[in-house]
Image 1 (cartoon, rainbow, N blue to C red):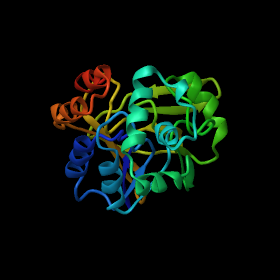
Image 2: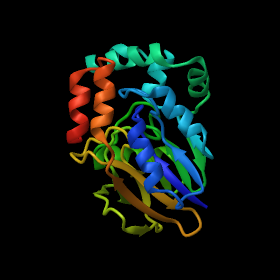
Image 3: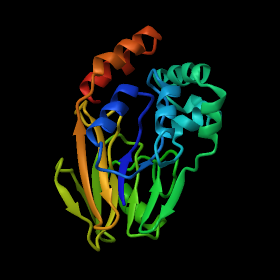
Image 4: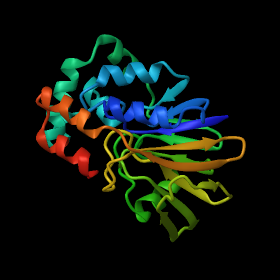
Length: 242
């Protein structure tokens, strides 16, 4: 089975549609690592589009915030405003769907968590030190995470040697006996100075992984965000990938 790995759509419908179009014919099921909503202008539409496909999804910190499961005061002011707007826009059907999502799952040989296996909803794995700690918090060979919006592979060599490997896009990687924490990056709000939507393809039979990027019409998402008076900083960052 071939899996489309996505994370952090963040209500960016145009980015999500671009990923689905670019990946068409290369996958059988979607694994979404959470934060389907938040920040962007199309929360209900993104949830509806995800639900049209064979998929599983995790719940992320923005999903929890809109559900009232986490205090929005721990977010920065722009994120708080976006969360409050999103809560006003989301339908009961969308909220019911999000409320049933777990924040962590295991599908051997993979553990799936939105943020980290140690703290599935909030912790950011941004560096080898944090990754090293988290290898003690899952038992499978591989763990897939999102949350940071930065595509990366953390390879465990020994207790004091974890390497952060940048992806080579469109190059298929054979997953070996090395334990890995892998982040596919963000569909809807990349933060690695590359504004293109990020996703990956995982082949469960051959145990191969391929990172991908795809251009989407950023200006259309920005236009929709301006229409709803969402924070200017959130609008600007989409075109710059930060």
